Image (cartoon, rainbow, N blue to C red; front, side, top):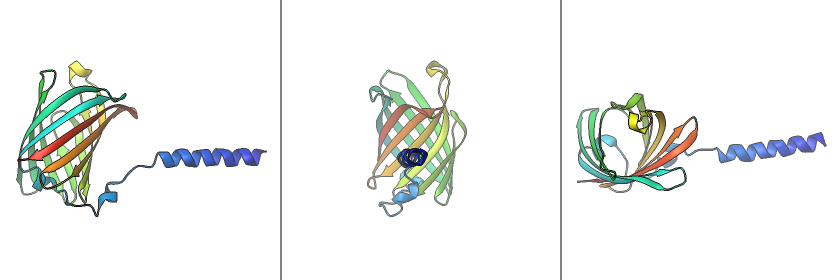
Length: 176
């Protein structure tokens, strides 16, 4: 009886652990067109997106204008957000490229963002300090980008705190 119980518990644990398996950025190694941030985010880029709460309800929409410049392996991504509630926001990323890896800093990012590119994909992780009017919380950001074609990029971000999902952010970028 105990043995059957142990087998049942082990089977349940295996099923649960399999459900926790995540996608690796290297799963996209053979996908094209290749995503290189210093090539795609160079010049003017426009974006459109939304924030959804954990139930899937759209709670904010945005338009993004970016002015991006690279000097060798050092890049500046100057983002201007216009939100559907009338608020504006600015974020200036300073990014260092190290092969297929990227390190980023911005005024509202706690510490450094770490990213890795493979094929047409980049995974970017960082901690974002929300503005005081949004609680001032430090949120973990799991940011995925997929290059669709030479001008189009899809971006999906999961925002969590203590391992609990609070929001999903979707942005679609178009290079001018």
